[in-house]
Every structure is written in C-alpha cells, then in structure tokens.
Length: 300
Image (cartoon, rainbow, N blue to C red; front, side, top):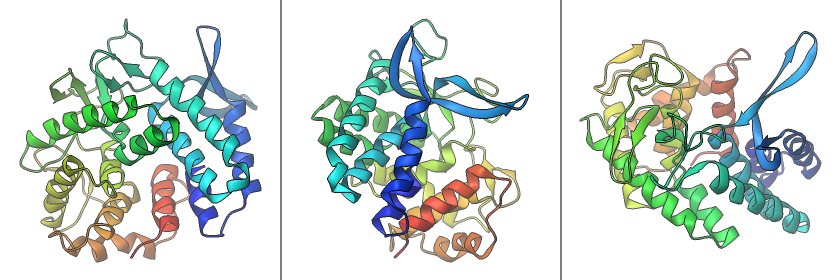
C-alpha cells in the first residue's frame, strides 16, 4: 500500500490500484477478544491449496498502512475523508492493542498483552518518528508525540551503548532505559544484532528533523562509511554476520545518505546505489520491497 501510494503521487499508480490493496487489508483485519479491530493480520499464505491467514497483527505493518492512508488522502483528495477515517481508526487501535502504558512504547503486535513475557519488548523498526508526527497531526491525538519521544529516547539509549551506533532488532525497555535482547529471544539467534529488522532504521530516521533521530542516524552511518563494503547484518560491535550484500540492508542506507548529504558519509551513495544495477530478486520479497519503496520515493 505504501509503495502504491507513493507511486500514485508520481502518476505511476492509480487510485483504483491502491483501493484494491486497501480492500485486501480491510478483508484481513484482526479480531481481538471477539472484537473486530482495524489492525491487520500479519500474514496470508496457501496451505493445502487454500488461502489461510495467521491471526495476530504486526505493529510495523499497521504503522505502514496508517501512513499509506495518510499519503493516499493527499494523493487522491476526493476520497481523503474516507482514507482519513480509516487512518484514524487504525491509529486508535494501535494505541489500544499495540501499546504498553507503563513503558509508553509500542509493543510488537496485538498478541502481546500485559501477561506476555514480551510486554516490555521493543522492535527498533517500529520507531517511525515521521509517521508518529503524521498520526498526531491527522488524528489530533498528542499521545503520538509521547510515543515518538519515548521510542526515540530508547533508540538513543541503544545507540549510545556501542561505538558503532548500531542498534539491535529487539530490545528490552523500561520507562527510562533500553538494552539489547539476547539470542533467540523472539525470532532468531540474531535478535540482539543489527539484523533484518534493524536494517530498516536508517530508512525510518532519514527524513526526521528530530535531533535525536539525526544523532542516531549520523553515528550509524559513519560506521557504515568506514566499511570496505556494507554486508548483511552486524553484531553491535561491528563484526559482519554474513559477508554478502543484500538489498534489505543497502536500500535503507542508500535512502538515508541520499536525504542527508554532506554529513560525512557521502561515499555510501555510489556503493549502495549499486544494488539498482541488479535485477530485482524475485525470491527475496523483503529486500525487493525495500528496494522498490526507495526507488519509487526517488533520490536527489
């Protein structure tokens, strides 16, 4: 939906195409405690020849959907009221079902409640300051400003813990602190490393004007600028995990340097743009999606 909304601004996609994806989202909204929500079930796939949908939402996906609705309202103003209504409903349910009022941080999905061992878990790719600002503006709910402030503060905590400035996929948080999780906490043995969630952080911070976002981004990007080549994943001390390139890591870095020139890491522009000289990998939906999103957003 985000790619299509951005493409729509450039005249490369139609409102009809966006609405088809919107209807798909509307048909796959999650149910929590027998109540229909505006949150989306995180995955649909084929099983025994039938399409099935995994229950439970993913907070990052819900945030992207909300942001795409905000952008669609600007792109196709005749239907703006409808898009904003859906955006507000989704924003409200994110705060109702994907938020920890003690840490004041978003949880990873609606499957996490106060009884869950993951209630104080933060996914770094859920820190989206520009999206939080947009939701605060469109909904009039200043709680989104509080969410932005709290999650950026926790991201700064994580950035400060290593000379590299790298942040982990997941962290344990309190109201005033954060620390990387250990291996195999929730998804993989790389949960506490700069891996396939944290790799989105440069993209998510790239256009933020918040000084904290700029600080975290600059420190991280200066680390990458000193590397001979940007590889797929790093320990927080800066040791490569997989010594090969992946669009999921390169595209966000390319986007970040493109929007923050003359900051001491311009050498990354050409090195990471090299991924666009390759064919889109049809077997890597994650890397291909990030690569496409950065491409349609364009570069300077």
